[in-house]
Structures are given as C-alpha cells and as structure tokens.
Image 1 (cartoon, rainbow, N blue to C red):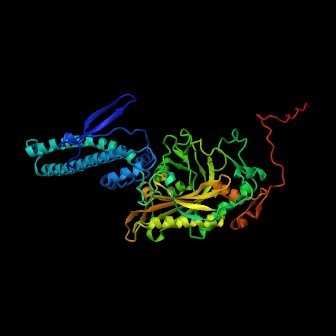
Image 2 (spheres, helix red, strand yellow):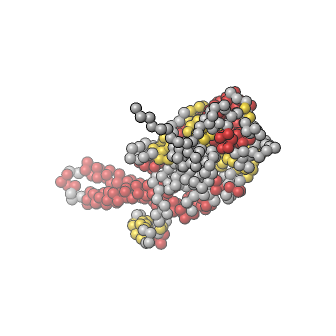
Image 3 (cartoon, one colour):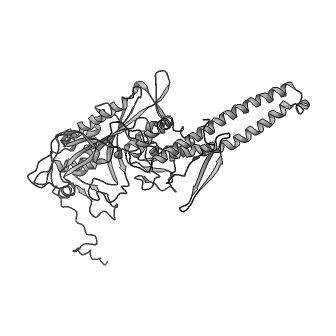
Length: 523
C-alpha cells in the first residue's frame, strides 16, 4: 500500500456545481497519486449494510481481490449487462477499497505502536519510583508518542467507518461474474439450446387465454376490476382455481419424488434479504412492493420464493454430507411491474401470482457443483413441461438478460398459440457464491472449516403463464380445453368445459344500457 494516494477527494455536488475537497488520510504518500472519488450518480441506501451495522449479521465478504486484480474483466462484465453501473463506477469501487485498506493498514500499525508504547510505560513504572519518572526522558518521550498515536487513531477510526460504509454502498451493487459461454448482448442474442415437442396445429383461429377463460364461464376474470383490485389483477374461478391448485400440487409432487424438501416461506421479508439476493428494494422504480415504513419498518413483499428460501439459509452453515440441499416452495409472489406499457392485458404480466420455486445450496470444491445442479434443475423443468404436453424451447440467456446475481441463466419459453409467439414460463440461474457471500450461507467441511456455498434457483411452475400455455395449446374448436393426462388426477377432469351456471352480469356505472336500480320500499 506504499503507493496509495495521499488524499481522498470527498465530493459534494448539486445539480449545477460539483465541489471537490481534498482531505488528508495517510501521511507520507505522493500527492501525484491523488484519487478523485465522486458521489454515486444515484443515491442508494444499503439495507444489508444497515442490517450488519445493527449487529444482526456478519459483514458480507465480497471477493474484492478478484475485482482489483481483474478490473478490466469486471468492467467488461458490468458494461455488457443492463443496469446503472458503468466502468467508471468499478474504478471508483476499487479506489475506495484501496483507500480503506490503506487506512486499515495504518490503523493496524498504529495499534501495534500503541501496544508497544503501553508496554514500555508499564516497564518504566515498574522499574522506577513515581517521583523519578517525571525526570526520565524515555518515559516522557513514550507519553508524548502515545498521545500522538491516540490522536491519530481517533482521526482514523471515523474515517475507516466512513470508507467502510461507502465501500459497501458501492460494491454491493456489482453484478456477478459471467460464464464465458454466455452470449453477449440483448434478448435477441439468446441462444436456443433445445426445442422440445411440436407446435400445435389448428383448423381454426386459436383464441387467446382471456377469451377462452371468459367463454368457459368466467374461469378467468380481468374485466371491471380497476375499482376492486387495480390494474394487472385477476380472479380465477371454478376450473381456473382448480387448475392453479392442480399445477401447484403436480409440481410439488414431481419434485418431492426427486428428493426436494418442501418448504413454506414468509411473503414479507427484510430489505437485507432482498439485497443479499441481488435485488434492490430501495431503488428507483423498484419491482418490489414495500409496506408502509411508518407502521412496518423495512418489510417488503417477495416477488419470488427464492428470497424466502435464501433467508432461511442466511447466517447458517449446511453440513457437507447433506449437500446439495434441494428445496421447493410454493408461494404468492408480488411484483410492481412498473413498466406498465408491456402486456397490460391478460395473465402474462400481473402484480400477484403463485409460483413453485426450486432453490439449491451446493458445495464449491471443484467449481462445477453449481453448474451441475443448474443442469439438474433445468431437467426437472423439462420433465414438468413435457408432461403438460407443451411445445417449448430452452434458451441460454445473453448478458443483458442476466440479473445481478446470475453467473448463467437459462429461460424456458412455451409456445402460446393465442399470442402466436413464445412466452417465458420459467427460468433458472446459477448464482455461484454471489448470494452466499452477502447472506453468509456456508457449508461445514468434515474438518470443521467453513466455506461459502453456491446457490442455484429455478422456477418449477409459474402458475398464470403455465395456465396461458395450457389453455391456448390444448383448446378445441368448440371452445373447451383438453386437460393434459399428467394433470387429470389432480384436476379431476379430462376436459374443461363451460359450466352450466349463468355468468355474472355487470350492473355498475359507465355502460350504455344499464338496468334500473331496485325501487326503494316504503314501510
């Protein structure tokens, strides 16, 4: 650290002016090595850092050696993905980290000096009488040096705290590294790994799932709900509700046959768990719903069961002989879907839905364990969707489609005839040690040593989108829907047909021919 900058540049900015103030940090360094640090281009409050500072968890152990040693590679990874980070942000993260290490090095050296001086003073006190000590030059020099060291430490301790907070507020936003085989670019660069099944052929124009759902006696309802539950909401009724339950139970049963442990998880979790998973509940236009902070501080609704399961393993170690741990949960997911211009109608993009989620914790001894577990999860997805008699494709997703925690991600898109296109119904990600380093998810080797685990997650069945694919794929000319054979024991039906009951009739305002209201009776 001998070439570290003499000064840290603290930046305070307004919209019209940026002011730089040089503040000494470490003495006896070359002023030419000054490192300019600007405030982030956007504010970010780290729930995870606050969680640590309050004593709930240990600090995340980010792999900063790799970031510093391979800065250009990290910059390339950052700039190939979507997000607000750029190459300059990575350089500033490295600079802040180096300053923090320089301050910690000086603190360590000064604490050693302080300990040595304390020992010297104690030895002199034990050797000489109290009156004689005042005239001993070495005693007075030791006291003077001790005061200088304490004064310097008193200046460095708050600086270390400041740099530590700045480091985590910046570095926690870094994405995972990227698998070398991942395609570079946007979603158009996704690589088709496999095509499964055949597109269904019809001798009629296939209907969309909303039309089918309405014709089947209100199996799906989205109309006249703006004043009830807001936009992007829906009801499932009759066979629609039974179809959701059947899909959940079928997916859970399938996975439990393959040694997955079922779990029920909380829907509300602290922001630290979201951030540890690579999500930003405090970010602008976040997809996360947050509860009223005045009544429920730092509680958020989970958009995926992955967050709840990750929270279960947070600050815990798994025994090596139990790895890999395969977990499955069924939960309700809540997503703000702030990009309201996309898929405004139908079940494809909604604010709440049920989902069966796979989550795995595995070792990192060979570096291949998590890649193998991801392939296993994808095979489970294929087993489920093939049994539902869907035509689908497996995609190796490009860099701009990877979330921050993903090292590699596969999507599965099913053919949806009513849309005349493929639509994503599932995804699976290898997150390596990205989440485990932030959430302190470890495993214990046989010798008692601890090692950061790798985590893998994948969707087993996102209910609304799977319903879309089933209704549109298995529809008949008459408007009924054939039930896939694997689902029939769960649904209790071979065909979904229009029920005999009369559909509800809307009698609210804003309609051309509204029926008259009941006449008040006079008693």
